[in-house]
Length: 353
Ligand code: IPM
Ligand code: MN
Image (tube, rainbow, N blue to C red; front, side, top):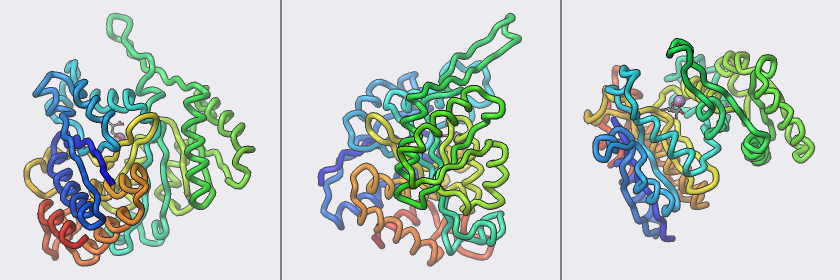
């Protein structure tokens, strides 16, 4: 196949982890006889520095023309402590999500048998965890009305959802559950928030269309607790934007390293694949960041964007092999084992595909 991939490396460790994913994807393409056409484009702080805008129109055009977008990370510390900065790298990410219509963010959480003891949670709590959080990505408080009043002494952000926005996300959740263990949990705060009551009402109305799916409704505060106490009890979780942001960071702890979990964002136009971790500026340029989350995001890309399941399986297999053989970066190596460089892990994965 001829595969056109937009490559958005972004900031911090983004370029380094993206480089490794490119090596692995090229190796897979060679093995399975695909032609990959990479088109790199600017995003984040790198784009602000170059053209003054974190998601330039040229980048959007590249994404729209591609079959999939592979994305590194966004964010730079020089903006974090400057509340008055008017242009921020994160705005680029939000604009990209909105303009590409990426209304669903798919964040799986699973454990790797060889890494179970890397998790800060006890083995018996996390063994068998295999859940997906489906986070609504283009609505809610992230995109609601906001502002200041009373001479700047009062600030507000509003959370708004329409029935249609909830339905399209929930439909994906029901369909995903049908292909898995047929359990769907709708996470909200319906005991307090009106928008949550609309979520609950909308999902309840959809239950009749998916009679085989067992649906539960839980409050977000309770889920925050149960997620670390009994994560294997969940299958598919659907939730609004901000709750999903928080719960997916929490869930990443289960697998043992932020550097392991991939994600996809899907919706109306081109789908996007990215690691769930951030730009990790402290590690930028040091060749120490774990590239596996980005490599596994490339596996999701083969499976979900191109429907090439064998290619995805080949990537997952080589990642498991690297973990089993200890070809890992310092976050996973532990004190007594050799830590490999980011680029060495990428080279090894590509050579062993
Ligand atoms: C994420 C990030 C973003 C978000 C930030 C960088 C805007 O935390 O992808 O989860 O809050 O959505
Ligand atoms: Mn987040």
